[in-house]
Length: 174
Image (cartoon, rainbow, N blue to C red; front, side, top):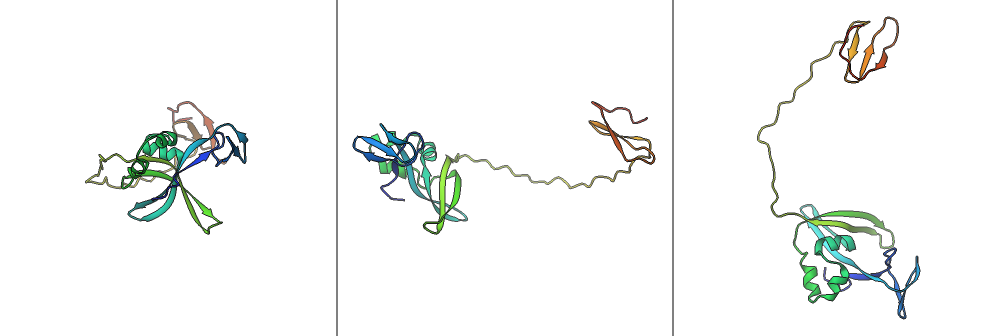
């Protein structure tokens, strides 16, 4: 989206917006600061075959997509061209969706993003393995062990089944 406000000045500790007070900076959470950092906050529209959403790409995701920090981007020429380099490229986004009670809408925040590789390979199978139903299992007669990989289950006359722990069960007799 073509807004000029694609970055903000932030507290290096908590990453919240700071206010400049003379030659210093003020953070609501961390107080007076000697320096602040520039962070990406890029408004975007993201589309796929199901629809379009409006969201904001924040610093970490923008660093991943643009391959440079916000401070590096500010020192270069053609800032608009750098931001437009993201346009019409396929990417995978981690989108956090939250209600925006102030504006009565939904806020979409993108904190993680990666471009998809253009050489995507799709594997399809031409044959589907047949579905098989397992054979029913008949319980053993009373007094005979039932074996499994870790335990032996002994059925005793007149009692509930009891288990005994074993490392390996090879014997199916008493």
